[in-house]
Length: 419
Image (tube, rainbow, N blue to C red; front, side, top):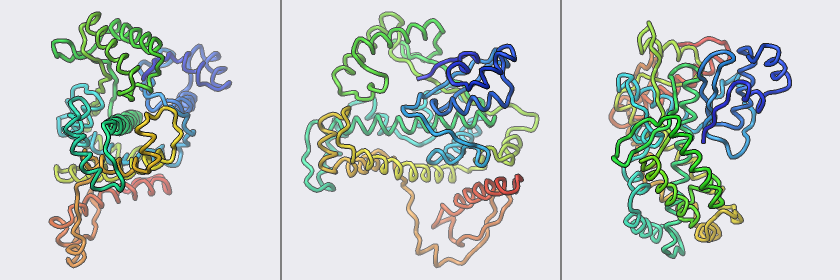
């Protein structure tokens, strides 16, 4: 979900009395400091935002309406970092992807971005958009072997649906939030565009009139079927199925479209310094932690590290949901699995099956026996095991991660980067 506001509309909805008075006093404009304070209020209810225009003519587009109002974040000490699982890794992977593609990347859906970054693969996408029966059969075999007293049922498809929808929603939300954070400190330029796939399988940017028409069609169908936007992830619910059939028909009949989506355009700003020197300057400033000096090997390691952190967090959330056996929106099979305490174990197996967990294995005994040697990362030397390049490919990545943490702490204490 996204919504556009003029500066006046944004102040009216989220502004304090002082900001409203200032807007009136300054003929529809706010100072930079006042606008920053206003955005803190906006971020409590939206995951990301973008700004077009200047002064009183600014248009603010808010994306990702939060289901619950977030706590107000004071960014003076840590600049809002650490709020997302694997934020450093996602920041770095996005920047690295732009570099590897010569800073020329077409607008893509968040799902396509996750695929291009290597975070999700073809198996998950195939299950999301294709036939799921073959996946369910294999999964039920694993459930039966690994989970005590598990009795397979045709409605296990409900659990597969929930996993696909919820896990993808969380990953997309994290990625879009990272786009917003990178754009806010001008590491990238980020723009959200509405795109559609035509009945001739051509993807193109939609016109403003088409976007308005889609919003009208979608809004009226939600009301007709008694649904909210947040209900649509329950794909096996009969009202959702009916909504989708009618939406697809009206899109095709009235606009010649098969479907529509938000496409994310990202680019690193042009600079006289050159691409890498510009990024070095941004990293030294310390507004956001990232690295752009990734070889192909270490980019793969970083993907695995992100998956490791994401899967642990995802499983933790699943264990929390398992305890909530009175959620009225749960389908019967989901309620049953929660009561039987089989929901979280199934979630863990689903994470492994769809490649959401790290595939990295560490030979710790070989590392412990090896003599130490020195490696250099970003101009800083670290001692690691001599055979680490063969037996412990995480060593240099861990050094990269350590530098980011040290740099953040240095800026916090002294206000100066050590890079």
